[in-house]
Image 1 (cartoon, rainbow, N blue to C red):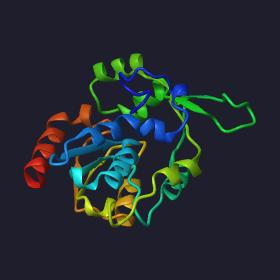
Image 2: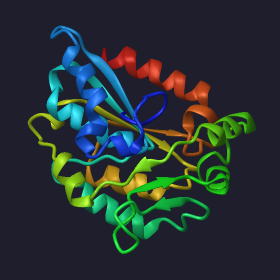
Image 3: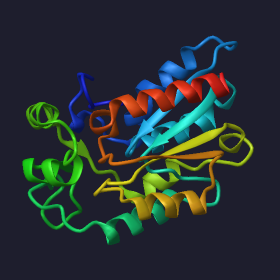
Length: 221
């Protein structure tokens, strides 16, 4: 996604959620029509792959939501965000910026070291936490109405793509109860629970995640 990972743009150079999705959409558009991919969305990346499913349903063999936000045709992102904000215990030492003024909603968020260690990486190896702390970048907070509008999906397109949800049972940000609430309101083809995994499943349970993903590829591709 734009302004994430090694992507060169800064968060303030990505003014809208459609700009944020752009790298994935460009990749999907460039795929030959006869090729299909497996999309894996983690955390808020679930919104990105949901939009890709809506726009390119014929190019996706299966979509995997990994402790991820998962909107649906009858389950919009505004509803999900409202419950998430109610359920989150605290942002602890995270830092918000208010580029539009202190009386306006925050425009970006940077996870703090304590939040990372106790909420996101609490079961992950310490070296992964250390690297994340060094490389962490702020990310934009987009208007909720815009988010909901840009992530509308339909039964005809989004609903035609097989979906699998991977539950992280020790996730302290997108908690197991919250994950199961999304699944209940937007049922998937399969639900797989990865035991003793924190939010960063790829670090806390990499072997288990890899094994499950290989099984998904064999089944759906």
